[in-house]
Image 1: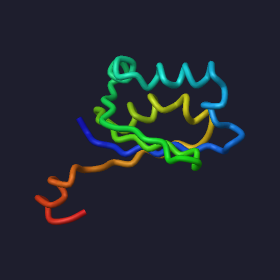
Image 2: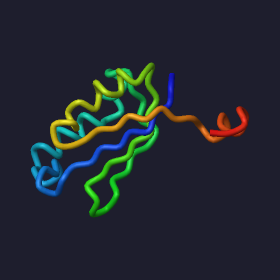
Image 3: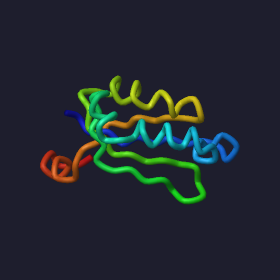
Image 4: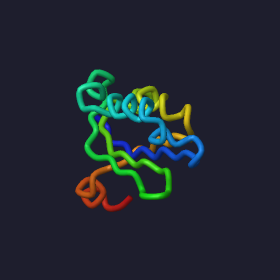
Length: 96
């Protein structure tokens, strides 16, 4: 499994959390069981307060699986999937 950092951003006007139905659907989508059914293991997630930006650290077979899993978020804003490494790997290979 490869490691990725995901960044999703949207405007205040398109914030899915403002709509209780949409918010519930997104929480279900982010559930560990649903993520695993889509080949994604969510290691962590956080929303920057007031910035309408979600960051996630995930493991998946590849970038395509992460992009496909994040497709519902792309309807509300941008999605960026970035290949990443654990700190131990970066140090062992001698740098970023």
